[in-house]
Image 1 (cartoon, rainbow, N blue to C red):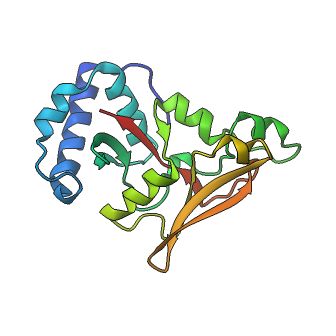
Image 2 (image 1 turned 180 degrees about the vertical axis):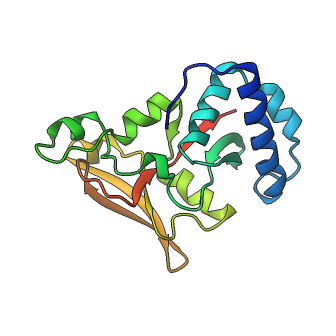
Length: 182
């Protein structure tokens, strides 16, 4: 997986075709919205972030989070190219042994997206069943993070669960989901 800082015209066109196909396949996620209207609003920076979401297997699609349109990761499980990461840089540096390659917060910044909040994560679950076998770090409030913890969510038993773990922990089935405001 190689993240990019800039896309060629042909890469942009290929990406837009992929996004439009997914958009049309999952109209329940964005009723009464035209893909062309979305595509017309996207700039080069956003297209590059969407490309990076795609290459890390996030399967970005348009979601309405309480009246604001975003591209959000809609892969069934936490994106494969973003797993086995601890929560943030401080957690990564605090780990003495078996450090992961990256953190969720740093990788989200490299991709050009924001981590989903707990609220975003719960809204996303209205559009499908996500993370039935995996889990995803979510943006953690400072008061929890300052004590060494971080939050993650998953969906089991038709219920979204919010959990805590040490921010320096990482697991093969835990990654993170992100969003990009349109």
